[in-house]
Amino acid sequence: MKNFAELDSRICSCTDALKAKLDGSNGKRAILLCGGTGCLSSNSMDIKGKFDALVAENHMEDKVTVNTVGCFGFCSQGPFVKILPEDTLYRLVKVEDVEEIFEKDIKGGEIIERLLYIEPNTGEKVAKQDDINFYKKQKRVALHGGGVINPENIEEAMGYGAFQGLKRALSMDRKAVIDEVLASGLRGRGGGGFPTGRKWMFAYGSQSDQKYVVCNGDEGDPGAFMDRSILEGNPYAVIEGMMIAGYAIGATEGYFYVRAEYPIAVNRLRNAIKQMNEIGILGENILGTGFSFQAHIRLGAGAFVCGEETALLNSIEGKRGMPRPRPPFPAVKGLWAEPTIVNNVETLACVPYILREGAEEFASCGTEKSKGTKVFALGGKVNNVGLVEIPMGTTLRELIYDIGGGIPDGKKFKAIQTGGPSGGCLTAENLDEPIDFDNLVAKGSMMGSGGAIVMDEDNCMVDVAKFYMEFICDESCGKCTPCRIGTRRMLEILTKITEGKGTLEDLDKLEEISNLIKTGSLCALGQTASNPVVSTMKHFRDEYIAHVVDKTCPAKVCKNLMSYVIEQDNCVGCGRCAKACPAGAIEKTDYIAPGKKLPSYQIDAQKCVKCGACIATCKLKAIVKK
Image (cartoon, rainbow, N blue to C red; front, top):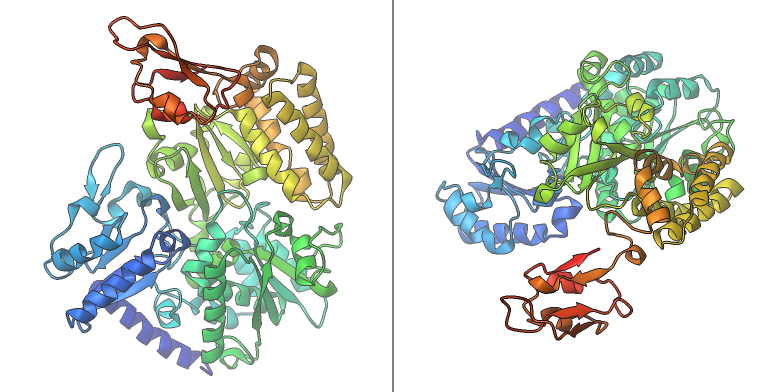
């Protein structure tokens, strides 16, 4: 494509073709299958292969299309199969279900009710995706196209809005593009929430013959998969966002830094770059505007510290991934000492929307200081686990109970960890707080990249803090002493506490070391490393006290502080627990409980390894933790 007119013509034909496919006006029914990592790991491609075979066997190629799309978001219910134009959504589909779907629904028009989603609180079966509570309060901006288009088909991407934002940007003055992003209120979705337009303005004002745009796809938070799903579902949008950023600051090259553990995302990104080069959207003199841009991919080796922008730049340059002192900031002296802007995947995915729909439309959603939407990976003790994109200002209660479906098994909500290992815990008193950058920080947590782990009454908060500190210790690059040594000392103290050897003085030491790490570390990893400890001590100090004074774990998680006991009056003497015990710690007694016929059993605390096999085996629940 050599000019805007050719692009408009191509977009128009692609839009018509995609619309006809989605609404059935082409005379065909469409079968959409989730092609995200989660569903692929649950045999989604085998399901597609079975559908393809049935279409061929029944000579229905002119009546049915089978297509792989991006992530539907509702990960705990995958694999998904969606039937268009009726918009029927089947979940937890297995290969053996395919023939029934094909015969009854595709050929007979009959909905298979057993494969429909069931709302956990009402028991209602729901056939259409938009009617499921999980989706009702969501708005897809960064996830635009996910679950709708084939992420490996540039024609479908163009039919769903791709490159319209780029076209508008290329018709504007570079400064005007930055002003548009500033007016939108877009803030960096990678963690810190720095205004994106301001970062671009710094690079725009830096004088150099060569500038760079870097996309940070090094997603390392435990339980986080936002960036992966965006790249897997619509890589064209992220590339388009990078190109708009490049045009705005005067850059001609961009680098995607994606961890090698994301092979599907990398392959789809590579395929998208290839297709865009082939049609002339990437390369030299794009659309006859004189703007040239090329995108490259660099794979990360999985170091969490490389999520920090200067460590990431070092890694791209072939150096060890360790943070650089700042200033100078990357916008002045970044990749290969040239002006560079580093934005994460979600941030760049929002940019085409802003240029396509306008800054005012983007800013109409959200709060005063946090505009737009935010993608969260919702996990942990919640019924509806998955990827959600919600308007800023949505409350934690809406996220956990309306979208997440509440806590499983009627358990009591205890806390939610936002911001990953760098974030903090929020409790029941915060459930009605709106989610935005500044409010989460004010409450002792942070937005981070968007991880949201829900915990219930069975979680030990000291153990949670220990888990995150173990992660931080493993991922510390070791460059600065406060982080390298301070986090190790904190982990040692937390381990001591969970083993029942802690003292009240240890709690004072944790607070002291936390402050030293926060003020003395070089990068954000160290500066925020103690957040999980600080927040759990603030909200759940009684649990810490119980561990060090009473030598008990209230949640009965810390093995050294609990024991397994058989309540002998409830034991029927079946002996199943003794057979399941790998340590031979369960033995028969002489006691026969009232109303029982066989002697009960007991556990030898000295031999017990606290594996939980006995509890899992006992159907009468006669074994308890104490």
